[in-house]
Length: 121
Image 1 (cartoon, one colour):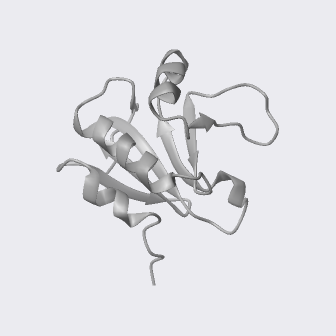
Image 2: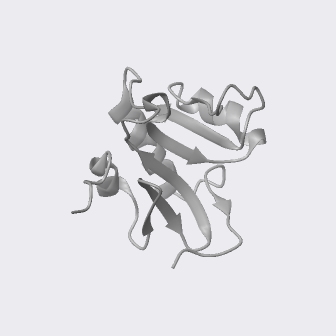
């Protein structure tokens, strides 16, 4: 039996034509060759649960200004910032912030998404 989609409400706010791919207990969301975000809700390392937003470091400040609930994504105490941002599931206004992210994606905001080498199957 497949686990339910984490934060499934997000799918209602995304544009048509997105590609969903389950990997490693998470749901990866693509548009063509661009990964947009990952939805994660796991009992293992719950501090990483939420919406992982694919971006580039040069866009982080402007995205955080627009959606203050977004934070840096840092794994295992590594203090280097990645190209990912995290909307933690425990954010005070999680659902509203998630919908804002989806609206940016729907309007083709170039700050969100990263081209992947291999498109999802």
